[in-house]
Image (cartoon, rainbow, N blue to C red; front, side, top):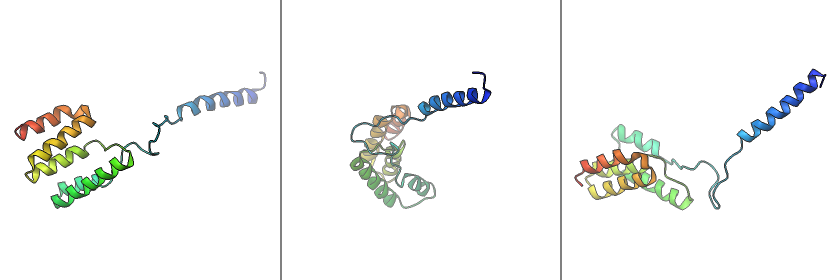
Length: 125
C-alpha cells in the first residue's frame, strides 16, 4: 500500500474491529433480567439513615421489601445488604435474626466470611 490514506483507513478498521471485541457484553444466564446484576433499592438510603440515627424499624422494613423485590426479580442482593439487616436486627435486640442475616451475607459473599464470623461471635454464638 503506497497510499498513506489507505494505510490509515485499513489500520483504523483493524483497530475498530479489535475494539468492538472489548465492548461486547457477557451473555446473561437464561431467564436473567437485563441490567446490572445487583438491585440496590433503598440500601444506600437506609445505611445513611442508620448512621444519622434514623428509625430502625422503618429501615428494617424498607430493606426487607428490597430483599423481597430482589428475590422476585431474579436479581442478586448487593454486597452488605444482609449484613446491614443483621446489624439492624442486632441493634433492636433480635439476636437470632441478626445471626441469620450475617450467615446469608457469608453465603452470598464468601469474602466477608471473616468479618461475619467476628460479628456472629460477638453476638455470642
